[in-house]
Amino acid sequence: MAGDNNDRMLFATALARRGGELGLQYFRQLETLTIESKGHQDLVSEADRNVETFIRQELAAQYPEDGVIGEEHAALAGGSGYTWVIDPIDGTANFLRGIPAWTVVIACVKEGVTVVGVIHEPSTGETFYGRRGGGAFLNDRPIKTSPTTSLTQGSVGTGFSNRREARAVAKLIDLLLQEGGVFFRNASGALMLAYVASGRLLAYVEEHMNAWDCLAGMLLVEEAGGLVIPPDPKTVLEEGTLVIAGGKGVFDKVHALCKEAFSL
Image (cartoon, rainbow, N blue to C red; front, side, top):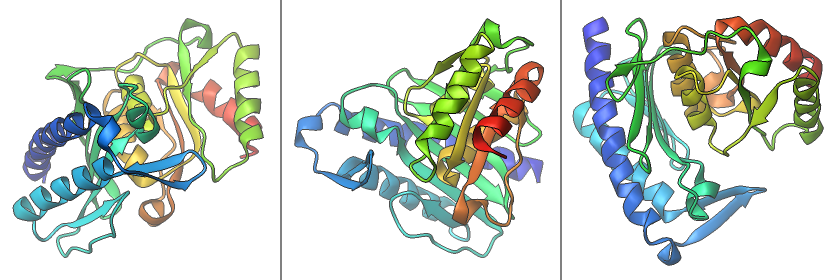
């Protein structure tokens, strides 16, 4: 099993980088893209769809029995027990406005449990990746979550879901500031989770995230020595999940703030 997951991790890491190269081609010619709105602050372009199509084609060629779930195209059932979960461009709003904070995200799930996670940021060439039980890495270097025990010693990433009330996020930020902490947001939840795994952020919280946005990053945080609220393997692929992830030293404090802000 570990060997199989390692092969999948290596394949997904290379594939995310190739998908990122395709995404960069579109990023360099934004004025030519066709852009649509899927709702409030929710945009999609031909770049999103075409990068996902490319990734799906490569997965189908390498792992034809696996299922695939992606943000932009219909889910594909598989018979192997493995399901790939894809966000071709996480941070589309950044991407379409020329802000170089967007990622290609690939996770692999076995019977509801994430076993492989890859987050590639094409603009910097940074690739965060790992497999369950195998550690987490950034461009071949092992990474660890922050060891600090104080919220005053760094920043907490915050996301906002249009499926939840905005006032809950505002309350969380207010509580965090009262504790002497500061918040960070770059509009790519996957990238902020990667930053938690690598110790750049103390924690990341979002009241609701879709599976393709969060599963890879949550695995990386765990493999980097951090803690997460475990998603329900029976519902996470279809319904998404609450995300609270952070280094062990601050996790309980962040969790307590989220309980108050989100009325958990």
